[in-house]
Every structure is written in C-alpha cells, then in structure tokens.
View 1 (cartoon, one colour):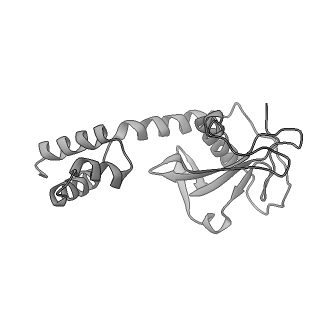
View 2 (cartoon, rainbow, N blue to C red):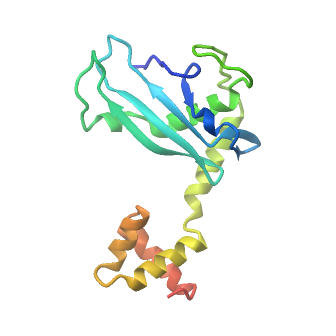
View 3 (cartoon, helix red, strand yellow):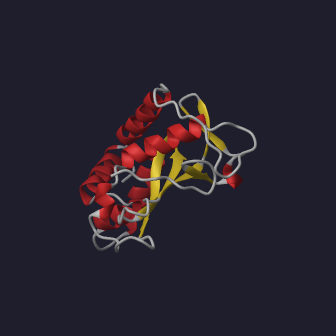
Length: 183
C-alpha cells in the first residue's frame, strides 16, 4: 500500500519557488516557508491522490491544507481516505526532504538520495511538540477577550469558531484572559 510519488519540481515535492528567497529556520536549517507534497497512486492502485500543503509557522512545519482527489484510474473519494493518511509522518517526510534538497539549479525529475538517518528529524519533532504545548500567545488572548466582550450571543462559541479551536479550548482561553486581567 505505498504510493509512487510524482511531482512537478523534484522527486517528491513541489516547492513554491517564489517563496525560496523567504526562508525560515527549523532547528538549524533554512527551509522555504511553504512547500507541497503530492502523493499520486500507481495505475493499479485505486486510492485517491493527495496534496499536502506544508507551511513553517513559528519555527515548526504544519499541515495547512489537505486536498484529496480521485484519479483517472481510481475510485471516488471517500470519508475514510483522509484517515488513511498519516499526516504527521508525511509532514516530517516532506520537511526532511526539503531540508536535504540540493541547492542550485533544479530540473524536473532530478533525483538525489534521501538520508533517512539524518538527525534533523529530531529537530522537526521537537519543533512540532513545542508548538503544540505553547498555547495561545498574549495577542491571541487579547483578541479572544475583545471578541468575547463584544459578542452578545454565545461568546465562547464565537471565539472557538474565530480561532478554529474547540469550545472547551476557547473557554480555557477566556479563563486565562480573565486571569491576566484582559476581561
């Protein structure tokens, strides 16, 4: 059940070339701010293709979009298809590949050997763990408090929807904002 990877730029990844001058740090490496991983199944595999949008946010790679599409030889897209993708593993693979990508002129279809033992994978995992533990910034808490204060009906639900977080998390943010004197 493995995918054969096909890409537009290099062997596994499509990188937004316009973003190449705008690099950001992950660990001790400079990476483009945005890149994409395409997974296209071989002709005898009926599963859908995917495109994973990755962006470096606050020093950690994040999935910013997932596009699942049927292929000419495949079946329709089903609800289970997004569950079958190991997003964290794909983010790590894409980031590790981009970090090892040879600099300079790149041709479509150019290949290089990926070092799967590269210790950079630890930097990627540490950055992602630290970001998950970080919680809301002071600016986010202030924005949540302001939104909460001006919303008449269901302010916690409004904060949750605005930030794309669970209502329980929104309640905790409001509690933290109140404790910090923002409300």
